[in-house]
Image (tube, rainbow, N blue to C red; front, side):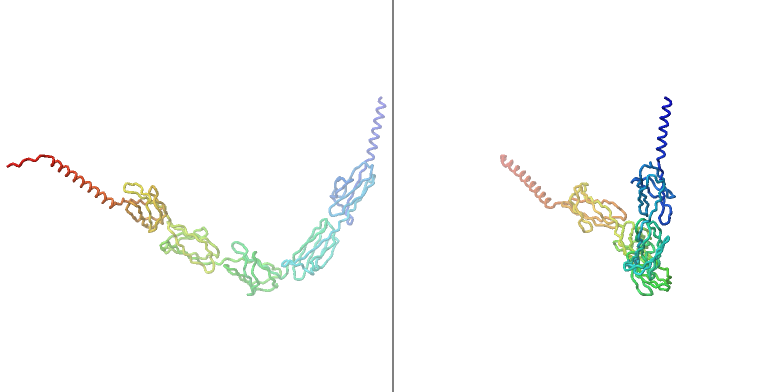
Length: 464
């Protein structure tokens, strides 16, 4: 029994040894076909399945059963795919990767006009590569180069500044667009000195000759020969002019100019509704207190930059005065008329017994303003710092008129009007007449009764 078990174990061991002996390790080496440099990160596919990528030395080891041929595919960016069948018992395979062919194209344009530049010379150099071409009517040239390589380009064109470019090629072709700047173009940009905002419409003069005006970005380009001295003058409305004598070097291409706004005097005179000067009125410019008026109602703002401002005038007992003004030219003389504050005035009409008089017509300073309500009240705003004549009229009452002084600074006030009832003469005459008739009738009745009594008595004989 033990002998049989030993034989079975030996048979199993032999089978395992035979299976192990049939396993094959395939070493794959991937290199550049021209330089023979090892290529790392090349993707390895066996029978269509991704199995790994090459290490830094360009190798990859694949263990398989060794029973059939392998379909090997190697892929790397910048190279053509490598595909081949490998014999089942092969232990090494060399993969020479061929770089993909690529085209490097340069397009040259004038930076000012964006038109193609004809006759520009482009020289391209790289590892083991050097070539030069001249641009045609399209302003472009093309070079056959290798993918995944770095190339340097030197670009020259008559009348333009030289340009250098470094280009990293990828797996495919590439087009590089280049703007060349004329070597006699000068760019000017005009800005506000305080806000740095671009100034449109600023006029540029060279040696007293106008060459143009700035655009919405405050820029202007023009041709100007280098290595010479010029007189520059730049003007803009409401700005102090810029003037400078300057020698233009060969490398000078841009001239930034900042203009400061012109300064103007502004006078403010403050009157009230009675055309009297208002002293100590506060003057505000864009919300900032500048000072107070003199006894003559005047205040001077000197050296105000040209621009748009909100001017506010305030004084106790007066409504605020405000105005938006464009300060330009030679400055401005501003007259501010302050209206008095309005107080809420309540007028109450009543009779001597303090009963309300409804429907009374109220006239103030000769102008009807309304009638009293059922409680004898009427509310109306009235100018302060003034004496108003208030009159009330109502049927059955005598008209009443009072002078009401509305003090400066007051906000609410009540004016009482006591209206006397009017005597009705016609009714009085009629009443007196009725009373007289009644009295007369009473007298006649009395007399009639007395005369009747006298007639009923017998006469007494006269005594002899």
